[in-house]
Each structure stands twice: as structure tokens, then as C-alpha cells.
Amino acid sequence: AQSVTQLDSQVPVFEEAPVELRCNYSSSVSVYLFWYVQYPNQGLQLLLKYLSGSTLVKGINGFEAEFNKSQTSFHLRKPSVHISDTAEYFCAVSLWGAAGNKLTFGGGTRVLVKP
Amino acid sequence: SAVISQKPSRDICQRGTSLTIQCQVDSQVTMMFWYRQQPGQSLTLIATANQGSEATYESGFVIDKFPISRPNLTFSTLTVSNMSPEDSSIYLCSVLQDTTDTQYFGPGTRLTVL
Image 1 (cartoon, rainbow over the protein chains, first blue to last red):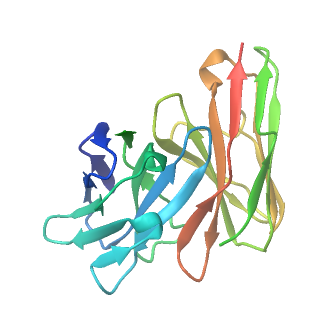
Image 2: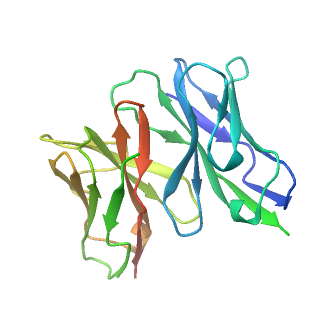
């Protein structure tokens, strides 16, 4: 079975500073990788995804992530954060080609952007 | 991406009662899912809602506690039965966009059980 580890439960960062959220996964088969964001009192919004192709993936709101197969990682980055980026971020995987495409989520990383 | 709505958006319920949550999507989808997010926690899959057949439940979740209906390709309901305070959570539905193998989520239903 696959699993996802988000190494940081909380990340405080100053406005306009860069941020990196770490995500590692384990799986015996190929996976699809996703980052979702949850703003306070809202549902989940898809930030970006890796299904195949280029390992550097660009998403919405200036976020990007890089898939590293050898390190089984999919870290999320943003070069300059805004106050509005304060939210919880979830990394998730699903098995490539598996019937059902069930998602397994990491524990989440809470980002607090300070002025 | 699909537009997904859930009703109710939040509710406060008494112990021992049941609540049915509705999920509506604006296009036909093959697969719908129900997740639970306990306070301060990540998301856990409850079940996959299959149109025309019984839902498929994950380990730790049973049909008697979380009955699910999927009458057509745009709608599903999740019932939380015989509620206890431990059922206080956000319940989210999601749909799978077949062409991109990507799940999109509804806004969630915030349930508080007293």
C-alpha cells in the first residue's frame, strides 16, 4: 500500500519570502501525485498535479513542484508568498492506472504567512 | 473542472440522531468518493460511491454507520447514522474526472455532534 509523509506540520514564513513544503511517498508501483490547498473553512482546491511528462510542474497561484522518482519526493515551492497563501496544504498520491484512483493523503502542512 | 455542491454546509446535531449529506455535481461522473476530515487532521477515505451498485467501504468504515446512495451519475448522499460526538468532522465528497485521473472536491459539510 502507498503512504505519504509531509515532513513539516507547520511552516511559518514571512510575506514575500520563499517557501518549500516537503512531501515524500512510498509505493511499489508508479503513482500520480497531487497538491491540494485548503483555505480556512473551505474545501480542497487542486494546486497542481503530476501524472507524467516533465518532472517540474507548475500550478495555480505561482506554485510549482518537482517530482523526483529516485528520492520519491514531490516538494512544493513558491518563490514569494502572500498573506493570502495562509492555508493548509496536502500532498496526495494515487496509484497509476489503478481502478478507483483512490487518494492517500499526507498529514498536511499548515502555512502561516506573517507580515 | 466540475462544479460540486454539498448540502448542508454545516449542521449541529444531537447524539443518537442521523444526518444525510447531499453531493451534487454539474456533469456526469463515473466515480464519486466520500472523505472524513476530523478536527485538525488530514482526509480519510470513507467509501467509493458506485452508480448502480453498493458502495465500496474502506477499512474501519461500515455500511450500517455510513450508508451511501448513488442514484445517478450526478448525485450521491452520505448518511451519518446514530451519531456520537466522535463523528464531529468535516465530510467532503469528491468526483473523479476520467480524462485527467484527477479528483475535485466539494466545499465540505461541517458536522458538530453534541
